[in-house]
Image 1 (cartoon, rainbow, N blue to C red):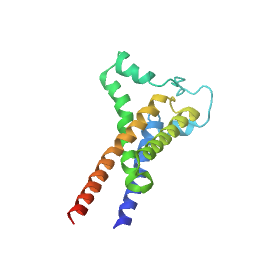
Image 2 (image 1 turned 90 degrees about the horizontal axis):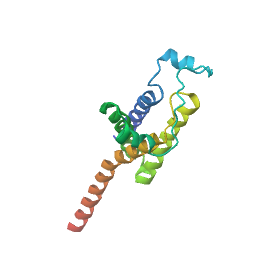
Image 3 (image 1 turned 180 degrees about the vertical axis):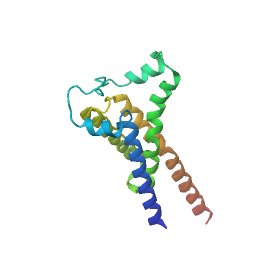
Image 4 (image 1 turned 120 degrees about the vertical axis):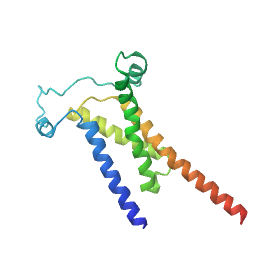
Length: 164
């Protein structure tokens, strides 16, 4: 039974990462665009040159300064957080190595950094340090239900030991 759960979680993680890759890296591209994009020509119409290396710049912009539709604000801020929450949830279920918040945060940060550097190098969008912050926060928030569950189980075991 335990093997089937691990296999199911591994498949779930792989499907999740494929969907996340599509949403982050290839959101503006069709399949032919992706294939032709690897020519790395300077006249690439998908290169925005709007990278952000200043922490909290776009977060503050979307929260307080942007004169844009609320849906766009929510999509950009909450979308990054919600998008990485499953990662923080699935990882500790899949491996005992990720039962600490610190390790989940490091893993979420590394995954997010990989996406951001890929966007920068392959010109699939723009690098934004705020995405790193929000994605990492999402991974940490996804871990909280797992952590809470483990605390409850640990508490119940201690209570059971005291009774016996």
